[in-house]
Amino acid sequence: MIHILYNNSRNKIKKCLNYYNKYYTTTTSPITPTSTINNNSTNNTEANFILTSLDEIDFKKNVRVFSGMQPTSDALHLGNYLGAMQNWLKLQDMICKENETVQNERDKHSVLFSIVDLHSLTSTKSISPKTLRSNIESVATNYLACGIDPDKVILFNQSMVPAHSELTWIFNCITSIGKLNNMIQFKEKKRSEDNDNISCGLLSYPVLMAADILLYRTTHVPVGEDQRQHLELTRKIAQIFHNQYKTKIFPTPITLNPVHSKKIMSLNDGTCKMSKSDPSEFSRIMLTDTDAQIKSKIKKAKTDTITGISFDPSTRPDVANLLVIASSMSGQPIADIVNEFSNKPTSVFKEFVSDSVISHVSPIREKIDYYKAHPKKVQEVLYKGAEKANIIANGNLKKIKDLVGLYH
Image (cartoon, rainbow, N blue to C red; front, top):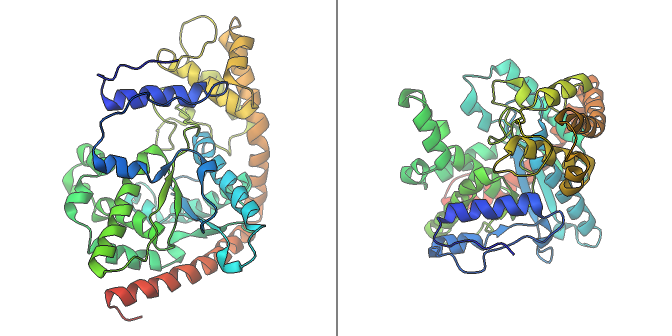
């Protein structure tokens, strides 16, 4: 039993619980507070639209999942794969299995995974048009190599469905500047950049995200912790639309934020998330890295001066991060790995981490190489996916335009 003093701040309590549930629940059950934290009614309402396990999805109702990643890099890194992609693969297979028992085609559940290239235009100062186009195909290649199956899901490129942009404008016209100014990610960008360099696109980024989701009348959205506020805004935009046009066309999208999703940190700093924006290539493992590159990066990964291997994210974040990676890649519980390497040199432990990563990543890399050698296969998948997405999007957009009073 873990006791928490409730005179601590709510954020500290949540952080403590998250650490425990993410890292220690290989052998025990997740914990929750044993008394009520005083939330306001808004937070309580939002909690009703968050699922912390994919197994909580109610398939008695029609389910439609939407999610996407930006093509700001030419490959996914280990954090993308363990944090998001593995959940996508599980969702893909869960919904495919559920559809086996659905007789009526109209009642079948569906999944849409998108390469959200319009979002990446907020980073055009660092990405050239040539690089962006190349990244789009490369990310699609990574999706397919990881196991995304175009026969089970709709995989498409966002900009190939013009309805995303049209609905964004409609939503822009009902969304207040105040709400957008209050977005945490925008505030952070605003602090780090000169106002003259901040684009309107960056401000309305969450509105485009709302359009991405609501355009398909999505019911469930897998997102990371950093995107949860944007999904809250999506629900608010849907409510504003319903109130203004006296209708209810959009389902209330539910956040899928599994507590057991792996949060992989930088190899250079165990307190920061692994990110493709980090200037150091040694901070991350890419799915396209060679075996030699993976060994080199793990060998140079930051640890500490304490003898032996132990799992303590608060005092030994770098070692804890390597343990999470090793456990995720090998399938062994963290406790078992700690027992095996508790009295061994860090170099021996790092060899185990490298071998575990290589055995998991190398088959993915081989598939990436295959699709890179056959780019027309990737392009065909994106075109077919866009056709399917356009049918759904255009049908829903016509209904939305009718409600707003626009011709189509």
